[in-house]
Structures are given as C-alpha cells and as structure tokens.
Amino acid sequence: MDERRNLLPYWLSAPGVLAMLAFVALPLVLTLSMSLYPFVPATGVGEGLTAANYRDIATDEYFHTIFGRTFAMAALVTALCIVIGVPEAYVLSRLSPAWRAVSMVIVLGPLLISVVVRTLGWAVLLGNEGVINRSLLALGLIDSPIRMMFTFTGVVVALVHVLVPFMVLAVWASLQKLDPATEQAAESLGAGLPTVLARIVLPQVIPGVLSGGLIVFALAASAFATPAIIGGRRLKVVPTTIYDEFLGNLNWPLGAALAVVLVAIVLAVSLALNRFVERRWKQVFA
Image (cartoon, helix red, strand yellow):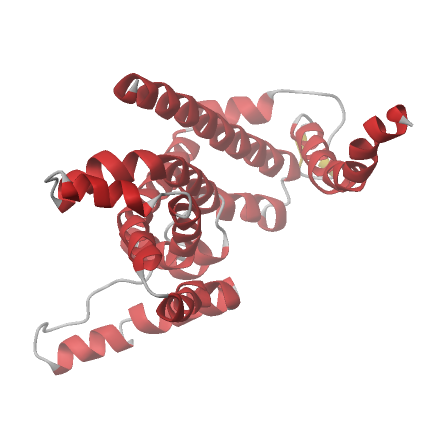
C-alpha cells in the first residue's frame, strides 16, 4: 500500500512529462540534429555531419549584427516592461476588489487578442499615414510624418505593449504574499513612501520581477510576428532570419542552427541572471 502511494505522484505527472517530451524535447532534439547536416543547394539537406553551420554563424558579421540587435531589443523591452509593470502591479494590489477586477481586465485585455491583430493595430497607429502622425500634423507639432514603421523604436513599442501583462502578473503574484502590516509598521516608525518601497516592498517582489523579466526577455528575443510586421524586411532579427532560411532560402540546416543558438543563448542568459540576482540579493540583505 505504501509503495502504491509513493508511486502515485509519478503516475499523475506521467501524462505531463510525456507531453513535454513529445512536444518540447523531441522537436528540440530534431532541430539540433538537423543543424548538424550540410546544406546542398540541389537537394537541400546533404549527408554526413558537420559543424559548418555553427562556424558560419560564429564568423559571419551579418549574423553577429542580427544577434546583437535581437538581444539589445529584448533587453530594452524587458527594462521598459519592468519600469511600467512593477508600479502598475503595485497600484493594482492597493485597489479595492471592484476596481482591481476592472483594472485586471484592462491589463489582461491585450492577451485576449491575437498578437497579429495587436501588431496590425500598432501598424495602423505608427504608419506615415497613421493616427499618431496625422494627429501630430493636425496639431502643427511636426511638418512631416515621423518614420516609426520599420524602425527599432517601433518594434520595441509594440513588443512592450504585448509583453507588459506578463510582467504585471508576475509582480502582482509576489505582492499577494506581502503583508500590508509591514508597510504600516514602517510608516508608523517615520519611514516615508520612498523608504517603504525601497526597503520593504522591493526586496519582497524581486522574485516576481526576476521571473517576469525572464519571461519577457525570452518572449521578446523569440518574437516573430511583431518584428516581422512592424520591422519588416529592413529590420532583421533572429526569428525572422530563421523564417527566411527555412522558407526563403530553403536552407534548413542553417535555420536550425540559428534556432539552436538562439535557444542556447536565451537559456544561458536566464540561468546566469537568475544566479547573479540571487547571490547579489543574499549579500545585500543577509
């Protein structure tokens, strides 16, 4: 009887493990194996194993530029989401239940709409004949349309709008564990709002900021629809380059190699940042 009870958690988790292996692990293994084959223009995928695809990525300045742009964009989007999402989550946690419910619907509203539809909405706003430029021209603030489509700034703005809800949810979940009595005690001892936020609230929401930041960074680095629509062909990032290699150039091995490198870098950055923040925070608040 005891052995059956000990095996129960494994039986319950088995379906999830099998699904993860089938839909996550197996595709990653197949992608890795595809990246090790050579590309033959006549037949596509050649025979024999080679590291030529990874050598091309490591030595070609074109790919260096694309990877640099991708991770610079992901880092900027993450920083902006933290700046916007953390105060927003704090305000949400202090609202009355009725207003909190309304605000949560507003915050989560973008997640209820397809990312393609949201991005197309930003294309309408940011275009030379879009709402923003027409409004600025009508007000006389500018003499000619500001170029926002097919720019780095336009992609960042659209991605921040898409990904801020993930940061808000992560921080808001951490704030639910925060005891309001600690803030009241600090205020009763003469601490001002900046001190309360810096010494009481921030240390307790760091796990939420970290988890939300890692989610946003990974999603921003791997985003395809928003850079493809807002950035277009002029602003290449790694996901759009992978798409071009697979479906444009039919160079599946190189596209697979780019995908593997992207996943490896995102995973390495996430693990390194997680360990750095944990160590740093333990040193500060030990």
